[in-house]
Image (cartoon, rainbow, N blue to C red; front, side, top):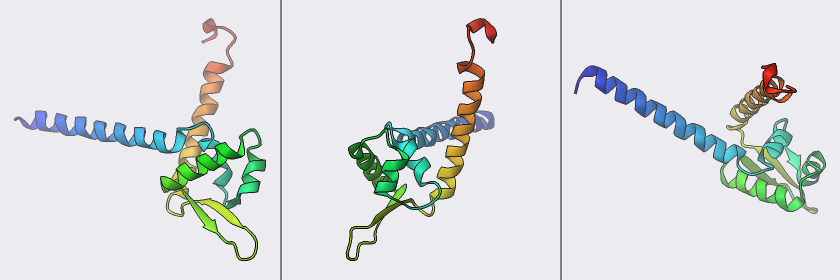
Length: 128
């Protein structure tokens, strides 16, 4: 096998791994209707469930609970039970994941702004 062929296979493997990691990210963070809303609500620090319900009022409690549980199972969200005499539970982004998740959300929002400006605000296809 020639050096060029080996290098080409290495690049192909890198692209395959890159695509797999991108797909994993999209499945973990973006799968499900309310995950983005939950992550955005948690980006600035811990939030109690009632606060989350107020920040995402269009989602049902069942949907938010399900999204939180899935994100917790994926290691993105941490549930802190701070109950002593009354029920007090907070949810937060995992300490090691928070910077990366926030950066990714920022990039996705920026892309969404650009996409909307370029493609969604046109009145006809000829405006391009």
